[in-house]
Image (tube, rainbow over all chains, first blue to last red; front, side, top):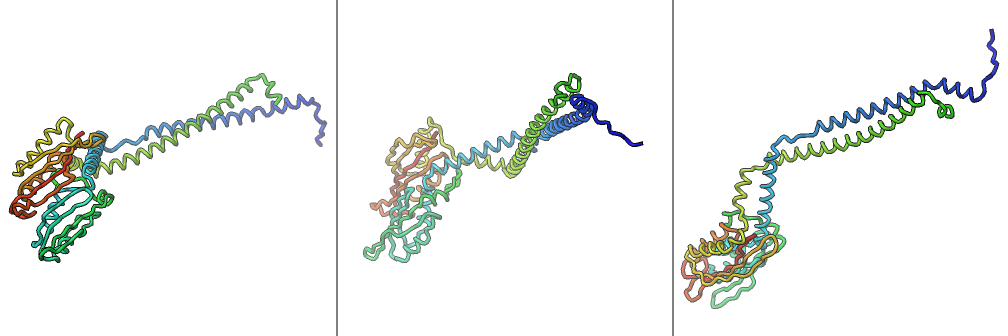
Length: 185
Length: 177
């Protein structure tokens, strides 16, 4: 038997209403699905956040000890900085005087030593001019401190000399380190 | 759309409720995810900090550092400057140096490192001077900033020699806070 299409005998509004009624379960399904999906997402995010809070790392060392160590380290740094600041251009009179005295060859006699942060001056005399060169070679005050003969004159066979050690402020400051009690040699 | 707005059944309420819940859940999800990400970033940073602090603490020798800190000279209290001055002069006298004159200047009384500047003239033997200078900067935070050592030509002395007397002028700072 052949089917016969008799057409739509409903009014337009009735057709729309019938279609709406027909599709309502689909709309409901879609709305519920989206809602469940979003809620699941929110719950998952919440659980992840809870895990993140529970997994907050804990230090494996004593916080108190760390605090004390930090404090001590800061005090050390501050103390060292003060000591460095208190010694302009790293000047150490005891070291310098000893260096001038100990580096001199046997035939060199010293008459004056003048020390300031900017330069060190030593005056003396010797019968042998080569001893002045030997002396100046032996005067090694380290980086940023360069010794040079300022003057030399011969007076009745005696060579009177003046040696000046100039201190480069930046290089000397970079080199000079704090000197704890008892190491001032 | 006209059918939905005209719908008086529970269906409309359920759809609207589902829509509202979806939007709220989506917003919550975004917010919680954002919090999770920032918390995990913070955790990672904290873990990294703890690890580096632990390594630092392992390497830090507390005992050595404490001993070193004891060795570092500290500025004295302002009220103790006179006592420190006396002790410094005593060091010179104890080493048989003759203190000819002592002059106190105002020095620097500003900034983190205040200082009293002192100028002292001495006469003595080279070995005594050497011994005195060796002890001079050990006990208190005192630094000799300028020094002048010269032979007293009248008695035929020489620096680093053992005979005769030498004249010494020392400028030093006594640091206090």
